[in-house]
Image 1: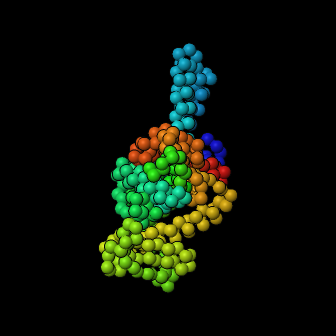
Image 2 (image 1 turned 30 degrees about the horizontal axis):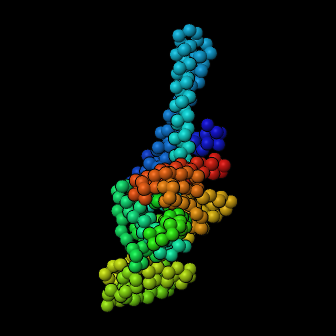
Image 3 (image 1 turned 180 degrees about the vertical axis):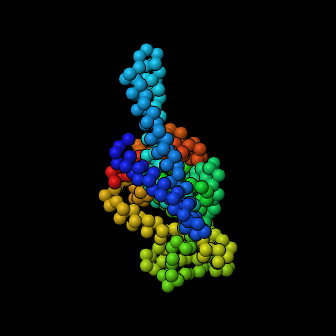
Length: 359
């Protein structure tokens, strides 16, 4: 294992022992004991593996020493043990590096996903509906709970914009890689000449935040109410239940009209606004931490074309990791989407590890 990582592990082991000493001295200070216990629990998986790694290294040194002095059958046994220990040490190194890599603090949060039709007119809106169905099916397969927060439908069954919430453990850790521009190449149903059209849909994945995390003064927002509208812009309610919130400092506008009451629509719109503002702050912090790092993996750069769905060839290509699947139907059903997400997570982990080792 590289010397810098060994040094970090030794520092963690020393700190872990110090935590045990402080816990023993905490007495009736329950708040301090709780804080120390929480920190100890976070470090324990790393410490357990680090101790196992150190023990395996000692065993390897002993096996190597025996190999140098032994003969015959005993030498063969020492050689076999050395090979097994080398394999074990390699596995432990990989596990330790994975644990040492700083995690995205948003990974266990719930998600607010915004799907917007881009270039391509009605065909883009129809593909937005296809992506919505894909994500709803994917969420169901992972036992995530979903809810449509806002929807702006077109007359042909597509969506100009649809916003959903996805709730469940690790939802953000998996769905965050869907942020970006999704491009579709296919023959629209309305195309009489059989020509392939190219359309785009933009997906934004935001980590849901609590009220206490993002303080939004009332003076910073403007709230407008209006009548809810159905597909094609038809007014479907006489009451002013729809809500539009404008965040004055940033110009962000969030509208919600799907609930029956103005209060519910306002709550949903505020939830989306908080998530957008949180993301802006998180991106600022990320830029400050590493101004030189420019990665397509996990950076959620919306202008990037991340994936192409080619219907004539039944092919889906993720351009960030240069990976293609020829099971387009399975991807659109949500069953094969993990083909990409799993590889994106591995690529993201490798990128984080490289940054960690260089720090």
